Amino acid sequence: MKYFVSIFCLFSLISCGLLSENNKPVDYNSESFKEFKLSKAPDYTNLSSWAVHPSGDLSVFDDFNLDSSKLPVDVFFIYPTLLTDKNNTRWNADIYNETTRLNVLGSSVKYQASAWFSTGDVYVPFYRQAHLRVFRESFWKNGGREAYEMAYNDIREAFVTYMKEYNNDKPIIIAGHSQGAGHAKRLLQEFFDDKPLKNKLVAAYLIGTKITNDDFKTIELMTNKNEIGGFVTWNTYRLMSERKTKNASFTISEEWIQDALCSNPITWDDKKTSNYKDHKGFLYLNKKVFPGTVKIESIDNKILVKLPKMGIVKRLLLSTVKDYHKADVNLFWEDIRLNSVERSNYYLENTN
Image (tube, rainbow, N blue to C red; front, side):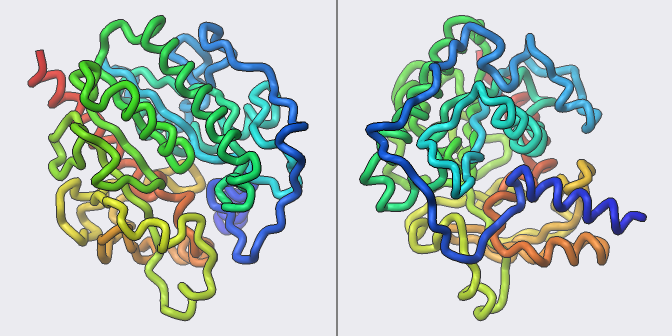
């Protein structure tokens, strides 16, 4: 029975895009960017434009039995690319489409944003994100750049509205994954870096993108679990044989991240490895957290981890996944949760 439950969970996650991968080149259908009709802009003074808002429906987090006694800290989370269907010709997502909204809530919000839910009030804006294909050079030069800019403009408007209407001078955590982390980087550059608002930054979790030494002037890579005012960042790869690695297709190419910075999301310091006993917890497909299952083998511009040390059925299912990009958060879910609480407490205790 447990085997069939695990199979069901696996296919549920594949359908919502958290673990799915395609090891073959994808030919995308598209339409002319000039002829594309962008959907109506979000109104972030309206709760319907937020996937998660403290005054909205928070039942998506009920499965985790998370501590509801939050700290006086806000978390602004930006979800990753979920518009990936090769047959979908849209350049930007329609956030008023019910399937799109349910996909955001059932995938990234449930399995990623939940890592920060017990830290403070979480804000997750719906935004007209760019389709996955824009990250291919041929599409980037023929509409992709503009589509990505439109997506950021939504995030920017959401953040401006959040600061004006909802923040009430509280400390802020900025977090995002993949495309979301790319937009989070730009928010930091525009509103925090070398600006007064940096004093309100608890930490930034810029996961699944490329951050280099040249991206910020005053926001630095944090190498201590209690450090505040900086950022952490990583891209996760599975440790495999040379043959398997060569035949795998990775969302984030190893060539692209050659000059990327990389954190240790288990020890939160400058160690290049970790032990199983230090790992706080992997949020698995069944919404349960499994500690002591992930071991970091090495860190340079990326993290290399072994196949998670779990029961035979779970291990068998995970062995089919070669690209760990979509699991950048899940693998270290409990580590992130505890770290964000720890950093927030340190900020509140040491900042006037």
